[in-house]
Image (cartoon, rainbow, N blue to C red; front, side, top):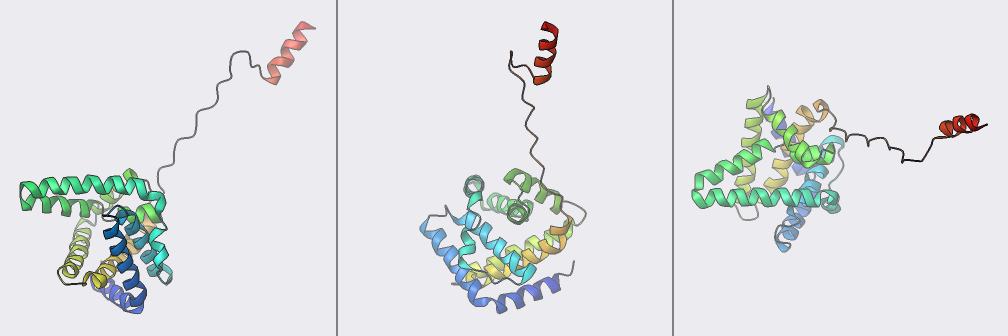
Length: 218
């Protein structure tokens, strides 16, 4: 994988759409803070899908894109709560276990959100597919992607309002990798099984049975 090309592309796109990206990132952070993080997961889904459309077709990100994936509110909220509880337990024991949990979840679920928004996977199927991808033949590539994604995000978090710039940069980088390595090589999500055929109630004869019965009586 050409990491340099992906980073350069992410840098150029960040600068090209800097105003829209800064506004969208700021709104996501403010609304997430006001709602105590309740809307943060579903807004992140809309955020990454908006950026994916920008990477794919040059569509300028819009603030309203943050709320475009509200259908995923409940599953993502439940997932966020589970991850938060697991991380809190890990950090309450020692710093290292909590860090391992955060890094492990980030790596395993690296492509979970774009799979849910772009490919319409359910939560469980998206986690399974993301884990299958990152642990496949390009394992080391995805490890490096995870390190770069988390590293860029961490640099921004360590500087006041730096995350307004590094969050879109890291997300554009991830979206570019997803577009190259995942989007065109991922099978469709599992189809739900068809409903079982209806069983006729006793006494509900089909037209053929009624005709045979009538001829027999005649």
